[in-house]
Length: 438
Image 1 (tube, rainbow, N blue to C red):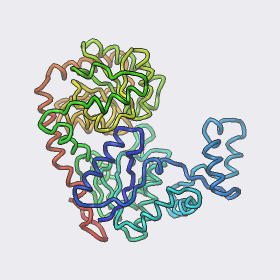
Image 2 (image 1 turned 60 degrees about the horizontal axis):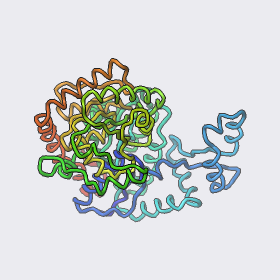
Image 3 (image 1 turned 90 degrees about the vertical axis):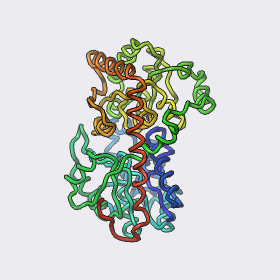
Image 4 (image 1 turned 180 degrees about the horizontal axis):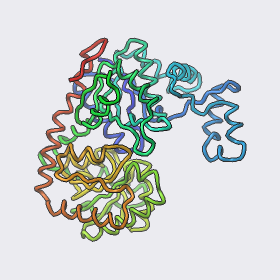
C-alpha cells in the first residue's frame, strides 16, 4: 500500500522520536508497504502564521523572527503583533486549520509537498507517539496532526493511527475540548492502536465511541536488534566516537567496561534551574556505587544535563548520537536512571534495569508494569536529597541482581517485541471504513 507517513519525527533531536519513527517505519516496510511521502517532526512543530493585513509569506518570516515570547512580553508588543495577525493559525476548528494550511502552500514548499502526498497516497499512517496528551493549552503538534488526519478522511483516505499514548496532562488536567476533537477524528479511523494498557483504559473511559486496541510500542521490536542473541550488542566505537569528537572530546573510556547512565525526563525538562541542582545531587549520590557514570540527554529539553556534566565532571553522550548507537549504549549499561519512555525501552531491550522518575504522563509508571517489575516505583523528577538516597539504594540493588535481573527483563522485552508486528497488521485490510477493536 502506498502510504503517507504522518509524524516521522526522525528529523528531531530526540532519541525517542527517532527510535519510534524508525521502528514503526521498519514494521511497515516489513509488511510490504511503501512510504511515498512523510510529514516530518519539523513540519508538525512549525508555526503557521496567518495575517489579513500582510501577505502570509511576509508575515510568516516576520512572525517567526519577532513574534516570540520574549518580544511579546515588552510593553504593548503583544497587542500590536496580534493586530497584524496570528503567529499560529491552528486552533480547534479543523476546517479553519485546513484553510490555513492551504494558504501556507503559497510560501511553504513543505506544505505543498504535504498536499501532493495526500493526493498520491492510498492511506495515511500516523506515528502517534505521545501527542495525545490532552493538556491546556492544547498542544499545537496535536492540532496539526488532527488537521492532516481530517484532510485525509475528507478525501476518503483510510487513516491508521498507530503506536499512540493517550493521557490527561498531570499538571493542567484534561482538556475536554481537545479530547472531543480527537475523538471525532479517531472515531473515523480504519484502525487506532495505543501502546500501553493505561492508554487503552483512558480511551475507553473518555472516548466511548472510538474503537481502539493496544499493542506494545514499536521500539520493543528493537530487542532483536539490540540483543539479537540474548545479550546486548556492544556499542560500535566508530559510530559513537565522531559525535564526541565534534565537541572536541574523546569517547570516554567508561564505555569499555561496566557503567551507569543517568538520563533526563519530560517533567524535569520544564524546570531547568531546579533540575540542575537536583541532578547534581543525584549524580554525586550515584558515584557511591563505584561505577563510571554517563549522562544521556534524550531530547533538547534534557540539555540541562550539560550544566550537570560541567559541575560534576561527568561525560555526556551527545544528543546527536544515532538512535541505534544510543540504544546500544543504553542496552549495555548496568543500570539506567530515566524519566523517559523510549530511552527506557531501548535500555530494557538489552536487559538494562531502570530506575524511573516521574514524567509528563503515566508512562514511567506504566512501563514498569509492562516490564513486570515486582515493585513499581516512580521517583520525583527533581529528586530531593532524601529521594536521591532511595534512588541510589534501588540502583545498587538492581546492579547487584546482575545477570539474573537482566535475563528476566530480556525475556519480557523479547515477548513484547514479538507482539509489535500486530501494530501494522490492520494496514491495508480495509480500503474504507473502520476495523473493530481486537
